[in-house]
Image (cartoon, rainbow, N blue to C red):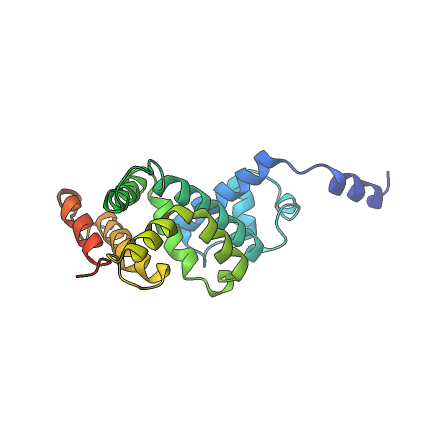
Amino acid sequence: MNEHSFIYIFMSKPLSPEKYTQIIEAAEKLIAEVGFGGLSMQKVANRAGIAAGTIYRYFTDKEHLLRQVRKHVAHRIADAIQHGLDADMSIKQKHRTICLNIWNLNESNTSVISNRAQYESLPTLGDKSIQSLEKQLFSQVHQILDQGKQQGFIKPLDNETLMHLSFSPIVMMLTKQRQGILSIQDSIDDIINASWDAIITH
């Protein structure tokens, strides 16, 4: 078997969904530990327990990998924070459910929250396809805000602004609590009420 035959057989092997997830999760853990600056394809391969060359069968380069990690994280966050929303709830009850879900997500998996903030700061990832996907993933949140605006008791701002006014401060405070700068564990109800107050009309 010559070199070209070996390469053909190697490249023609079907890609493994399990290995793909393994790489994504390894990259996410590394980002939480060393940030984007310390991330390399070699380090991801080492953490995933695969050969360095294998990773390029799944991702063309580091930016491609980061895009896929961001999508992976977005799916997990969307599922987590929209969990338990019910059509019979009032908009305020839905808002509270989202806030509690954000709180619980931080308690169960802090790297998801911290990584999300890092992904959003990357200008190379701010493309329209990812923004469109994330709008679809968080469709229930958008529907809640749209409904509140139509009924006249949520401020007539774009949804991204409303989410940053209402939910981003909670994420920031949870990050500060994790760093030992704030202690907000006993203030959850007051913080949720303030989060609601930030987006309603007065």
